[in-house]
Image (tube, rainbow over all chains, first blue to last red; front, top):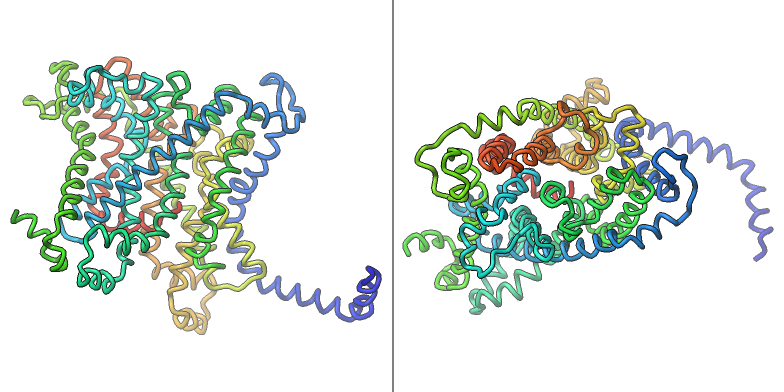
Length: 316
Length: 289
């Protein structure tokens, strides 16, 4: 079919149809107006601080200043390649990957253990749940202040009680080989109780009659876990894993308080790198480029869970 | 043994003799104790007199001569009353504006039909994916352009719209029978009157769930206020505590650090212990903040 034909056809009819379409659009807009007004306050702030911020990251990543006071000039993808070539950034990405796996796996495992052990509700279990949940409530900065002493060499809590079991006392936060694992402990301590809540909620969805049938058939605890409970918890696992990875990127206040990324960049994580570029080196171009790369990676991850989220919220 | 039997008395008969669940329970009890040790140390160290010396600092047995000196020192060195006021202003300001924005937007999604509903729904959903903390760099420059650098309003602004809250309110509003609204409509109530007198009062549980999540998360926020606030007298608790810790760490004043930390987390812990059930159910719904 040639292009001229379909173009010619509507012209004949649209002379009559257009005012109609326009009118219908206006009617539809008028009918929608109250809704738009109600959404306006939210949309203004979302536009400024979410979509606008995204746009500014994109633009800022393309510009650079020679000195902090010099005018900006367009540099294209130079910032991105500079960030990718920066050993501090690649180091931070690797640290962050280790940190993500090293915090997500143990905290999710512990959360599952806690939920399985405390799934039946009575006073003792409620108290234990509350104890495990307490760290979730406190600021990461407060947790860091406590763990600064726990990890203190020689006189700190850890060395005082278990130090004598070790041949050489490790310098928990001062040794570049250990520091990253030390800050992981804080994250696991702080988040396991949070993820436990989701597994507790998930366990309630395990059908009672299937469990009873399993008891009658003589299935042991391990078999029930493997063949009934775990398959039922699959969505919970997916959901909690996404949150745990998001937390591994965004919840890094303890790095600020305890190690400042050190010793020798061994605890430098991506968000701390971005902060350093922006606040300490005034390099907005590089900070934006690093933000952009991180956002892209996280959006790839969350796109996977996007459908789940849309379903959770019940669809439009 | 009797205690364990008591704990398992409502378990299915067939499973009561099993040993693995009991081992798992024992391990959980052990870990729950370990989980509480930092809190226990905090309280013991707060009450320990400085005369016990640095070597006794890690001792978890409370001192026989408890003192409030550490609390007094922390109170004097750190400007905690000022920090508490700032954090309260920030949390209250954010929550008040959020109540307005999420009520209006939640109502639009729950009860109104409008062009582009799907598109706007996904625009909101995007905020849930875009973890605001990653956008600190562009948002800091915007806050500076708006002339809000080093102000509490600058700390609050990025959180005024909440997709999570909007979806929570939409869900609550959808559960309210339309007959109630129809009756009000016949009586000539305007849109805002219907929201104010029918939808809001019937959705209080959802508002309180949202308030718990909003206040705890902004009470604990650190990185964003650290970037926006410059003057010492505008610091919120978290930033104040981190500065205070830095200073006291230099002098090895661990008792004072413990006392300062205790002061910062005590309000949240007290409220949590009172409203435990509500907190837990709110956090379950908060999977995505």
